[in-house]
Image (cartoon, rainbow, N blue to C red; front, side, top):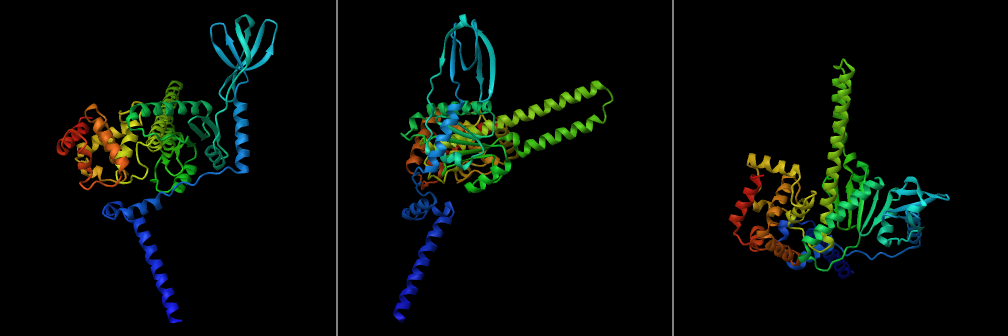
Length: 434
C-alpha cells in the first residue's frame, strides 16, 4: 500500500514538474530565452503559435453562403447599355418608348441616375453577364461573426463595415495599390506563399473596436488598428469616430460659441460660421487620411506574413515588421507621415534618439519614437546602396528567426557594404537632416 502511495505521489510531482517547466518556457521573456536549448524554444513557439485547425463546412455555413450569393447577385445591375461612342452604362430599363429608352444607371448599391436615351444612340442593350466571386468558408465565418455589418467582396478583399459603398470602393482601391506596390517591390523575396483572402473589418464604434482588441490579445491599448495573425484579419477603427476627432469637434464648437458672443453684425456671424465649417472639414479630412495610413500600415503587416516576406514565428526583431509597415503607410512608400517626422525632429533636438543597438534589440515597438526610428532605419535600408543587402538580411531571418549570437547590429551589418559604426552614423545623420 505504501509503495502504491509512493508511486502515485512521484507521478504527481513529476506532472507538476513538467507543467511548471512548460509554463516557465511560455512566460519566459524573449531576451532570456535566447540562451535556452533549441528544443525548448521550439516547444515554446509551438505552444504560442499552434497550427490552425482546418475549417469544415456546416449546414449553417451553407445557408449563409447561399444568402450572401443571393445578396451579391441582387446588387449587380441586370442590364448593360452601350452607346454609339463606346460609353457603357449598367442599370435597368425603366420604360421603353418608340423613340427612346428610359434607363436607370446604377450608382453604388442604392443610387441611380435616370435618363431618356434616344434609340439612335444605342448600339446594344441586353442582359448583363457577370460572375459572382467565390465565397469561401472563411468569408462565411467572417460574416457570421459580424452579421450586422455590410458585406463586400472584391477578391482578394473581403470587407465588413458600416461605411458607405463609395467609401468602401476607395478603401479597396487604396489596398489594391498597396498590394501591387508591395508585390512589385518584394518580388525577389516572395517564396510561393499564397494569399488566403484579405479580411478587413472597419469599425465605426470605439467600444466595438476595443472589444475586438481585447479578444485578440497582445494588442497595445490605444491602438487604432491591428493585424491579427491568428485570424489573418485586419481590424481598423474609422478615425472619424475616434476620440481625438470627437474631442477636436468639441473644441471647435466651444471656440465658435465663445466667439459668437462677441459678434455684433450679421457679417461677423457669417465669417464665424464659415470658419467653423472649414475647421470641421479640415479635421475630418485629417481623420480620413489617418484612417488610410492605418489601413496601409496594417495591410503591410498582412502582406508581409501572408506572402512570406516575414516568418510569423519571428518575435525578436520588432523594428523589422514595424519599419516595413511605417514605410508603406503613406500614399507614397518611403515618405514619412508628418507625425513620424515630428517625433524624430523633437528627439534629435533633445538628444533622445535611440542608438542602433537599442532599436534593433527591441522585440516590440511600443512608443511613437520607436516607430519613427524604425521607419528611418527601414527608409535608409531601402535606398539602392543597401537594398540588396537588406533583402538578403530579410531572407536570412525568415529562414532562421533565431537570434544571432553576435547581436542584432552585427547581424544586420554583415549583409551591408559598410561597417556598423559608419552605418549608424549615416542613419543618425539622415534623421537629423529631416
